Image (tube, rainbow, N blue to C red; front, side):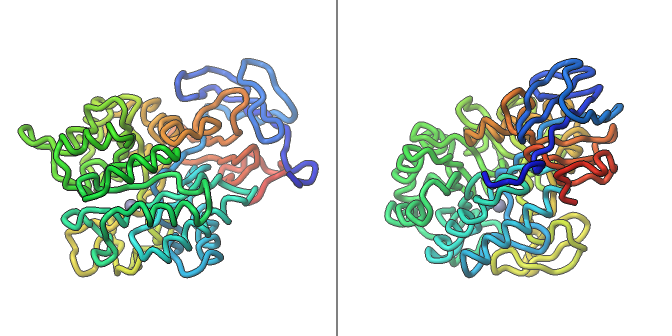
Length: 403
Ligand SMILES: [Zn+2]
């Protein structure tokens, strides 16, 4: 690293409540040295001590499914445009506690998806701000019956050749692929992707329970926005939703905005899949901007009342304007215990993609931290030990503060 001295301040957060999130600690010092957590213990400070009073410290949020924010979307025309968009998206979401993200494409031409992977790889090299963990390709290998807001003309059958092109675009960058396992050739791609260490997620699918289980047997380990863009859970035809909810190998993500999934069902998922449920935003470009008309990929959408819908099909949800802090509050409002809600936004998604230095507060992990007010709004956000957002003014004058 070529960082100048002082860019990584030595600092201690002293808090009465720390959710690691496996355990809740009382009156703890989180000592931060060189961007990492040096120790988590009572009365073991390093450097300047910032007393957070009755605020709550949790790990930085990890968003596995995010298309946009701050007016930008991942899909774009050149690698430089994609990289710039990813930086804008990260800057919009870090204000809401996201310290690591997997920028997510929507279905597009092969050429533009290769471009997106290259651009995400370029954005990944940034040392500042939230960590870009790689690319999530949501499509193009999705069910036409459950396209949701994806462009139907961009959907196509899974192809090992296209998979190889996307891998070659920037080796090691593709981290997740959402696909419909019932499509011809899908299981071959599942096996190839899983063998390459990519998380394969079942989504935008018409699969029945047996086909979804076969996908997990082939190596799929995640499910994309459970209940959305798949048949509903029926007691005689449980479908992909029933398959993944009952499969301990699979983590299930929910768009926890209270619109995509009813709060009662959010609580049901939390109870049915403890330690396996993940909150995502599925956020689009307008996240952080006022209500109005925007684009998701090349589709015109309208943002009103916290919902995003297709302009030409107002009953179809088209991504969200959700942020991770709001997701945690929605889960808690739905009756999910705070520690479980925090785990769904931190450790569980980090572990789901093997990012074990993220999503937890423990010695040796990255100092990605969120300080919450008692009402669960954001008081401060640190990315690798640097103050990225400080609306409460807790770190005024701290070295490394970026705004
Ligand atoms: Zn999405």
